[in-house]
Image (cartoon, rainbow, N blue to C red):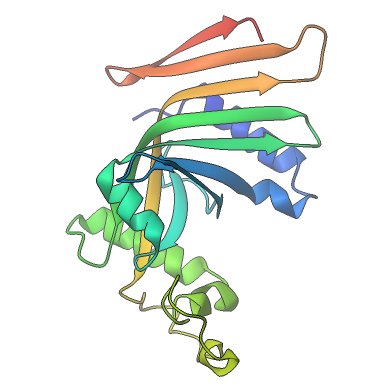
Length: 192
């Protein structure tokens, strides 16, 4: 797969906004099995090698896994305050679990785990999400081995098929849509 023009624009926005720690966070929307919208803030962990797929990490014990398994479609929304631009990335989600059989994706899961900070890896050893609040001591855990992902650690890939890039600077503002169709991307400038 070839890298799309929107990816370099997103990389540029990340670089130009890097002084703001929150620029690594995007909103990820899904639909619950009951049909309700579910939106959460996730951390961008980079792109899967040689693809346009965005990497996110999740705990298999969390409720969002149920949403993803129910309907693996999503939209991510990213706003960069310094450059005043927004990216909306619509596509499918691919959940890479400990049981996934694809060797390349398992390698990506392993590498992503290895690259997490100790604090981030430790959170996967915390008590079960959404259960009754545990005592403070339950959150004091040994740092998991950086080379062996815990079974509940999952790599989540957002695989865009449409990207809406809005630049709010300028008169008039600029908006470009990118669509994936039959393996290639088309680009269309539209009114903001």
